[in-house]
Amino acid sequence: MDPGSRSTGIATSTMEAELSAIVTPVRVRVAGPGDRVAGLQPQLVVEPANELEVAKVLKFANDAGLAVIPRGGGTKLEWGNAPRRADVVLSTKRINNVVEHAWADLTVTVEAGCTILQLAETLGQRGQRLALDVLWPEEATVGGVLSTNDSGSRRLRFGSLRDLVIGMTLALPDGTLAKSGGKVVKNVAGYDLPKLATGAFGTLGVITRAVFRLHPAPRFGKSLSFQVQSPEQVQGLFSAVQNSKLAHTSLQVRVASDSRAEVDIVLEGTEAGVNAQEKQLLALVGAPYAPPFPAKIWIARTDLWSNPDTVGAIARISVLPAEISAAIQLIDRVAKSRAIRWRAVLQATGLGCLRIEGTPESQRGMFEELRAHLQRSGGSVVILRRPAGMGSLDAWGDAGDALPLMRAVKQQFDPKNTLNPGRFVGGI
Image (cartoon, rainbow, N blue to C red; front, side, top):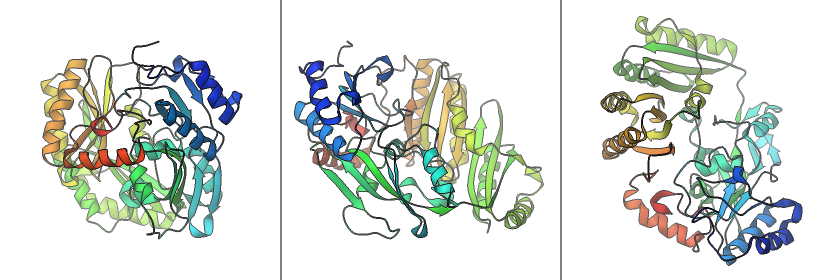
């Protein structure tokens, strides 16, 4: 067993017996090498079948001083800092039902273990969608997407994940099932648990179900790309499209150290409406950007994660929308000074992902330099994947004045540090 992976003196057999009494023996197993989390080897994997079992498992672990790692599809377990301890992996894979699709109200209630693809297929039967484009929808679960706050380019039109989730049930370490929000789009009563838990990386509680607002699925859509010559042209094209009357759904740029930038735009609606908007778009952008070609907008972020065996480090970055071109120039300048190859996808909202390839030392230095520059102007660099050799570089960076409040919230929800200890900002 790895040093630091065992945090208590409780025997694995005792833990297994106690958990089996809660979820039945067939839902508990000894953790194997495939269950490792950031190099730590847990002792057990438990798969509750419902919310009550999740709450009981958490209460047992909390009382016993065990560290619990919630896991959905396991697609983003490497994100954030490595946990300080890992005793029990709590899987939500069996809590995977679409509980209620209130199609007339444009809402859906879904359990945390449901995959995004499964949810999309259910909603599509009524011509509706959760307006969210996430990484690996075939495997990513509702709970995991909420916990990591993963969203893509549709955020520009439909808002962030925190805007789309309107209700949530959270299993807390003391065994409480806390519920907030409801099944209507306008809901202002009660504690805003959904916004608090979204993006908290499972450090406050285990999400067991969520309620989302929905949107009609478009009848027709078209994705177009324009090749641009410089970062300044990227900013100009973004500004022109954003200040127009186009009802575009997505707007992003794909840029790399060894190729020209390409701006992607998505238009959705009726076929006639989209065709009319396409004509307006071509007239708006003018000759420097024409002719357009089919876009690869939905796989752009996923492509950054390809070739996992190479020494590619990946970070989520944020900048002010007006400073996207400056950020591209900064990335390129820092990368050239450190002999690093890079690729990035930046959305018009100022959010994006950056992949860099080089030696571990040069990658670490680049992230540190970028973080120092971007944080001064209100931006951020959050490291999602790092190769071996980068050392203990913090994934999150400086939380500033918000850290004391965040620690107070963690103390309120999880005073014994049972859930994902150390994974979040400031070692929370």
